[in-house]
Structures are given as structure tokens and as C-alpha cells.
Length: 168
Image 1 (cartoon, rainbow, N blue to C red):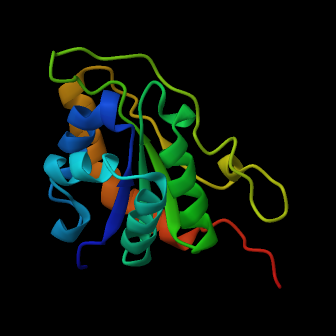
Image 2: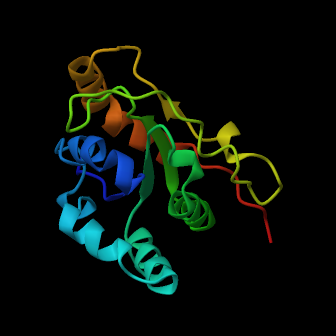
């Protein structure tokens, strides 16, 4: 099986280090992983340019992988990326990363489900359709290994179980 092209969504300011660990596991296509410099460049753009960049990137990907940290669910661009992935009928999966250590060796508390506030075309919460993986382990290395061992299956499952689209 070839590696999937996915779009990683996460809160850059607080979770870039943790997200980088997941993005660099080698489990998805290299075209899915942008360097931190690319992310820095994107976030300096105006809203219209950021939306255009997200739309272009999302169009080339089969699945959205939301890396969920402490405050991910409150982030404007994460919400936009989730809504866009749903509109484009992409696979969507969440992976909690709060138990991965950051650059200072610290873990954080679990954040809210970011899919709860995004609605399907028939008004139901996307959280009813999107799986959020939360490792049963508590030590950072075990959590890392658990994510690494499961991420490909989580992506495939997301592609097989997309949220329903309203018939037009």
C-alpha cells in the first residue's frame, strides 16, 4: 500500500513540536509534510491567502488528520480546515497529541473534541462521525509508538467511514 497524502491540521503556536513528531514518523507521503518554515510563511499571510493555500493543499489530499492539543478546538484555521475537508468529502480523523512531550519535555492536558462544533449538512455534529484516537498510554514514548503503530489504519478507516453528505 502506498503512503497516503494527508493534510495535517494543528495549532501551530502551541503544538508545532508535537505535530512535527507525528508528521515526521514516515507513515504518510512526504508531500504531506511541510517544513516548519513553510508553516511559518503561511501564517504570515492575510486571511484570503491562507484560505486559498488551505484550499489548494486540501484539494491534493485524501484525508485530514487533526492533531489535537489542549486548545486546538478553539482555533479558527483548524475549524476552517475541518469544514473544508468535510465539504470536499475527505476522510477525517483526530489524533490526541497532548501526552507527547513538547520541546521542553512537558506534556499538557487533553483538549476538547474539535469536531463537536462543526456540523454536517443535515445539522449533526461531525463528532458523531469522526474518530478521535487517544492513546491509552501515558508516557510520551509509548504514546508516540502507539500513534506510529496506528496512524495508517486510522487514515484508512477515516477514508472508509466518511461523514454523510446531503444529497442535492
